[in-house]
Image (cartoon, rainbow, N blue to C red; front, side, top):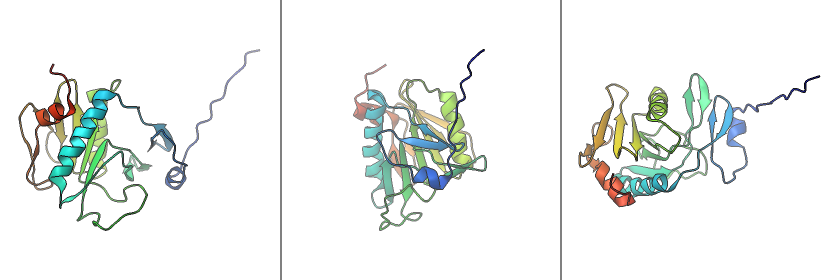
Length: 192
């Protein structure tokens, strides 16, 4: 007689997921399941730190920039709580005096995701599409191997920036923001 192993997968509602105790492993709510986020390596962490400094400098007086802040969204008509590497949310969407210890309650204007080892650009492009469908206005996918930043828009094709090509603002994010080379140089990544 063969033994069988039954795997039980716990499904969470948004409220159950948000009430889970905090621990060292960040989780995202995807299709009702609490999925642990991949642990970053040095290049990922260094680029995240550089982006935080550069985008935060740009954002002064405009809004707030935070790393690893969960965002409450919808994906495929289900609750979705991703934990982007960085988000920018303007004071127009979330007032400067708002300060509660909870997931971001509004859609940020910008989500930044850094490709980690084991992830592909194609998989991250699919995630960028999910963000856009959920109402995020700009998504940046940062590729440390290609030393590029690809900007996704809801109403036009993505644009890939490399080297000293300035990621300039638009009607959503005003003014010059940064260049990929600034990010990778500040992160201390080796030249390729």
